[in-house]
Length: 87
Image 1 (tube, one colour):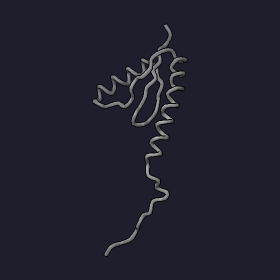
Image 2: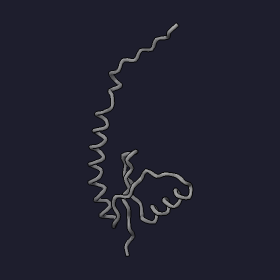
Image 3: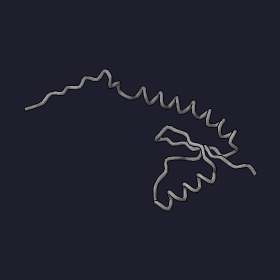
Image 4: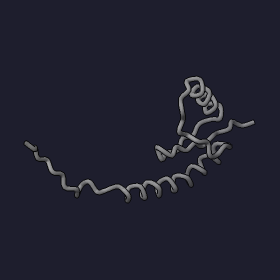
């Protein structure tokens, strides 16, 4: 049987990560032992070529989400900042 790979997604980081199922479960057990949360969620499992293809499609969605987030941020370059000292 060929090695199985996992495509993981992090909402807080708007990022993807690829690792083997063995690596993922090992990290999961360690997080459990340390009572530590993990932001990454497995969204695809399969052979490496399929995971790479899925990641390509997901990158488009992540880029769109980042563009939308950037549009919602205030434009700090044009914001007026008052720097006076009060008595």
